[in-house]
Image 1 (cartoon, rainbow, N blue to C red):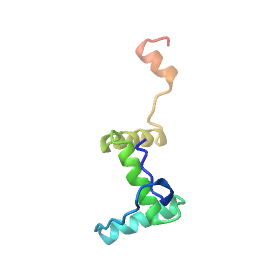
Image 2: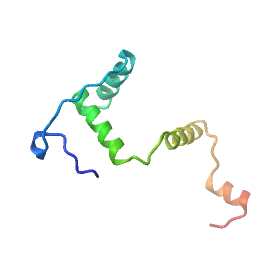
Image 3: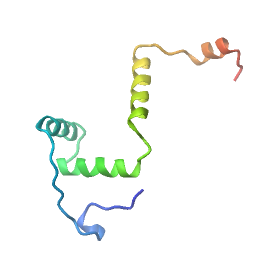
Image 4: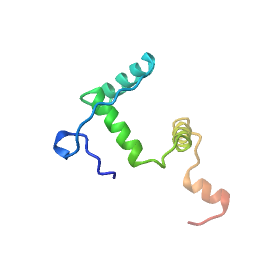
Amino acid sequence: MSGATTGPGGGDKVVTVNFKLTQSFLDEIDETWQGRGFNSRSEYIRYALRDATENPTFDRDELVALLKAEEAVREERTTRADEAREKFGTNE
């Protein structure tokens, strides 16, 4: 963890940061934070930035791979462990 705090009790001075987004992206952000139970847009953005900072090795390729695996499971395009053992001749 980075140890970064986001509240006044953490000892760091709280600063305001401004940046520009498209309205459609802001709409997506708003749908996301509200749907995930965050109390505010700011709380969600702080969470997302902290997560990106603390977990920088998780990249888009890994996310795509996870989504493809989830899709394969949902579409029942997976192989049971016992079938894989038989196919590849392993007993483990």
